[in-house]
Length: 347
Image 1 (cartoon, rainbow, N blue to C red):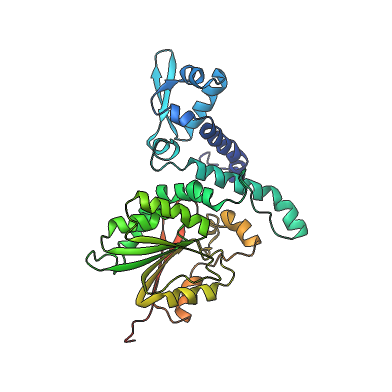
Image 2: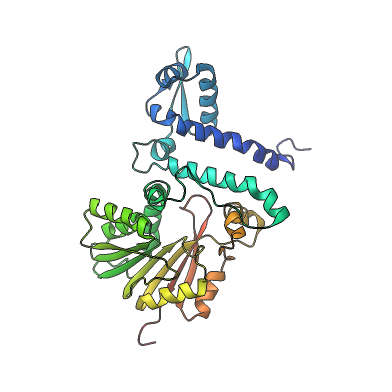
């Protein structure tokens, strides 16, 4: 018998303990511990500064060290701790890529759904949507969790995707962009900053694009970027676009084929759709990275396609040169990048 082989139950025991680690991270964010540990401190110093219980603080710090969120160094009679590079970048509020509020929102929303699962499977119906303390407030979401995720993750990932795509990769080409479901507008801002001849529109709910307007103005891009508020299912999204960026939007539309036709109409001949969203893989290991995040959405009747299904739908609808690849630089679930071109006039 090999003692290096985990027991068949080990992964399920790991599931049982994972909430302790999640709650440790949540408590650390809520208590401001990461911010305090931007510089090294002992447990005593940290507890004195934040009015915490010293022995329990010391135990929490050791757990965070085991989670690769803190570094530990011997400091005389007591160890000192400080944030790792990852914690500094993503969990300290002074960082431009802070996404602690976004992570906390995701934790609470998933946990809220999980508590409903027994009843949903037994009785049917739809899960009640998670309500934060502020209720459904799209403007606040755009400033906090959505904005944080875009600034910490999506901006850089979008640039990585778009740099592979003509015509964006040609800096001398004038372009008109639609950032569909663009929220607070950080992706459109990043693309405009990277391409001097790009102009564009951010489309989302009216209260959300009000936040995008402020961000665009602060970035000094008001002459090149504008916003359009509305509902993709029922309102006009404009026309004459060279590029449409669409990230995790098509899950939510009531009529997927109709939305794809609307996007097709909005593009110029030869225009490009770049769609980034999760799909369900065919193997259990890969599917396991997607299904837990999207189970609640699927019970609400949202669209979570099988891997390759959306690309096949686009090909069947007459889009040209449809290609797909998996992107690994988005956290949470792995996503598929689907690139489809509208036929040129000569076709």
